[in-house]
Image (cartoon, rainbow, N blue to C red):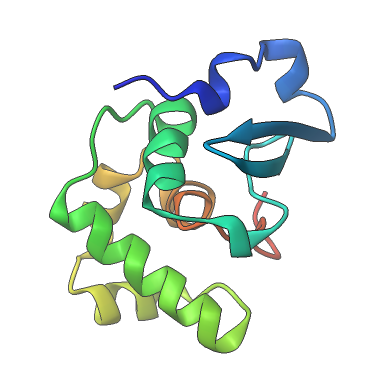
Length: 123
């Protein structure tokens, strides 16, 4: 499955502060690192497109979705990214597994795929 969302982005565009595109009738804006600027537009298809483009993942497993859904739920309730230990406890996925599932880590990878804005303190 191809995702037109990112087909039009180039390396130079990714370095820009804000990238805008349309994806299946939804207008998306991401920062130069691929984090959504408006988390309310997030859905599973956008997560899959971000996974492919940002993490190099062709598919998302049950483990990915457990982490993504926990992070998303926490964000919707508290408007902040959860602490990593809370992600492990809440999703049932061990820390090493999270790093195996999300090559760029829980903050950059998992939070990005969950549609969160860039978490505070995320380098």
